[in-house]
Length: 352
Image (cartoon, rainbow, N blue to C red):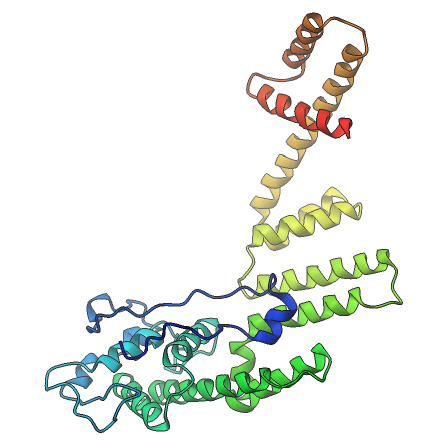
C-alpha cells in the first residue's frame, strides 16, 4: 500500500505530551489494509459525511501514479479505480459535512488529517500532494472537495512546521512556548479552523499549564492550592462536558462529591443533578441517597453493638454466635453479605 509506513509519527504535540502525558491521551489510528479495492459496498449511510458523497464512478479510466514514485508513470487501465483514490477515501471518509455541503472542522476531521499525515510521512513531494488533491476533487466534487483538498495540504504543511518547531532549543516558559504553537497552527490553518481542530488538545493543554502555575506559586498555601485546583478541575469538567468528552453521569457524580465536601444541602445536590441529568434522574439518585443513608445508619448501629460484644470477654464461639444474631437483627438476607464485607473493611481500618 502506497501510504503505509512502519514507523508512524507521533500523533500529538510533543510539547503538550511532555507536560501532561497522563492528561492528554493518544488517539486510535486506522492502519490501511493491503487490499486496495473500492469499499463502495460499505459506504457510510450517514448523509453528512464525505463517505456518503464520494463518487466512485468519477474515477473510471483515470490514471494515477503511486505517491512517492514518478507521477507521470501510467496508472490503472480503464475501468479500474486508482489505489490512491481508495487510500485517500479511507483517510477522509468520516469527515462530516454541514447542511451546505462544507466540511466541518472538528475532532473527527483532526483524527482523519492526522491519519493522513501519519500514512503519508514527512517527505511527500509537491507533485504527489497535487496528485492527492486531484483525486479528492474527483471523488468529492464542488466546494466540499475544494475545502478537503486545501485543508489536507494546510494540515500537512503545519505538521511539518510543528516538527521543526518542536526540534528547536527551548528558551521560553512552557506557557509562552505553547502560545507560539497555537499561533503556528493558526498561521497554517486559519484561526477558526485551527481552534476547532485543536479544541480538545487546547482545553487539556491550557488546563495543565494552569495546574502547573498553581502548584509552583510560592505565594499560595497548600490549602489555597487545593481549593484552586478543585475549581480548575471543575472548570475543565464543564468544558469537557460541553465538548461531549465527559459523560453527564460522571460530571454530576464529581460535582456532587465536591458539593458534599463543602457541606451543600440536599436541595443543592438535587438541583445540580437535575441541571446536568434530568428531573427523573435527580429524583432516582435522591432516593438512592436516602437508601444509602439508611444503610449507613443501620450499619453504624450494628457496628456499635458489635463493639460491645467484642469487648465483653466472651469466648470465640459465643462471640461469633452473638455477632451472627446482630447481622440477622440489623440486615435482611440480601444485605448480610454486604454487611460482612463492610465489617472486614472497617476492621482493617480500625487496625491501622
